[in-house]
Amino acid sequence: MKRIFALFLLSLVLFACSKDEKKEILPTMTFADATYSVPKGCTQNVKILFDVALESDFQLKVVYGGDAVKGVDFIVEDDFLTVKAGSKEAYFPVTIPYDIKASKKLEISFAAPVTGYEFGRFSRVSIITTLEQTTIFSFNLQKGEIPGDVNSFEASLFDQQGKPFNVADATEVAINVSSSSTAVLGTHFAFKDGKAFASFRKGRSIGTIEIEVLKYEEGKNTIILELGDRNGYFTGAVSQLEITIPKRISERIIGEWKGLDFYKLGEFITSWGLDEQQGAALPTCTSTDVISFKSDKSFTISSQGKLKNYFRNCTYNIEGSDMIFLGTSYPPERHIAPRCNMSVVNFAFSSTKEDLKEAKINLFITNSSEHGEVLILQINQYSNDTDFAFIWSDPLTFRFIRK
Image 1 (cartoon, rainbow, N blue to C red):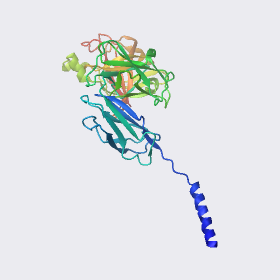
Image 2 (image 1 turned 90 degrees about the vertical axis):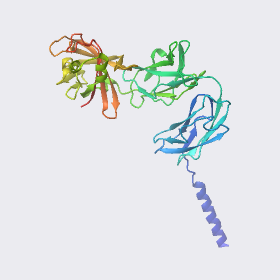
Image 3 (image 1 turned 45 degrees about the vertical axis):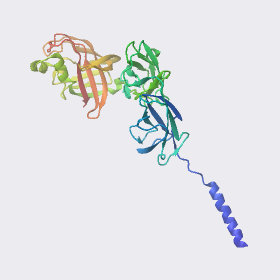
Image 4 (image 1 turned 30 degrees about the vertical axis):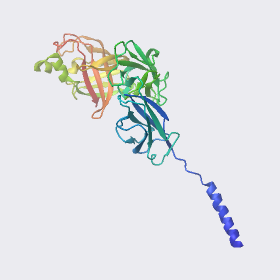
């Protein structure tokens, strides 16, 4: 009897302990949507969400179902999706060929979730292929930045066979700001003149979106744009544009910079048809040319080269921005660059003549894996009576790196 009573008590204790044990709650991964309708000739970037960022890279095996045949009714680049460490979302592109003859259903799932995760709301997604006609909208770049007050970004329209689609009349395609943006519309940035759309001129397939900076705030400087009203449009290969608002140029420029080169000098010489002697007369930009922008708005130069024939120690003020063109090839390399007003330069750009006056230059900072920060500086204002008077008022572009 005592033995039975002891066993009874032990079972009660074990039962109580099992009730106190809480089931481990795992982070989830889920498809963002349960279904997509994808017209022929279009690519759908199937979105997968993770409620906790991955700690390391992980490969997911993709499983296909439905009556759609791989290679006939749909095309994929790989049967695995690689999710990078730190990511909370990933995309798996699925292309529907233009020459499909019938509507089909494709189901996509994963063989297993990421280790340490479980499937959330949508563990699979269905894609219905259609024969409908549409126009494909795609951003021209995946990433961009606004170094000055404003910048423009391009998007393109294509038909379902991948050919540029020229609009019959001036067209505006609505643009949305993704909820994953950290910058806030109306606080950190705005669409220029309130135009929240990509503008396409009559007969053109490339349109522009203009964004202006209102305020820089650390950690709240990423804008993610996507197609807005999809009536008659379908997203293309680049469905989102990530724009960074970098620290303002007035802060980033502070410090010493040493010369790197005359940007695309060979191309410049060729475009002007210069001989060897004329090419040697052009201003140079080497490590012996050191310029400094100070926080008190003073500018100094220490140069053993020809840049000292233009720049003088002076004060500067950064205000506004301009569209500038780099290089002489076509189509031109365009940038909207902050405008820097120099209180005095030698307009003659000469070692023997002097014509001191105020002038403006344009500059912006980019990044290079080889050099780190690179300062692009363009001189647009100088006289026709320089030491290299065989060229006339063509912009001169130089690159500097941190000293």
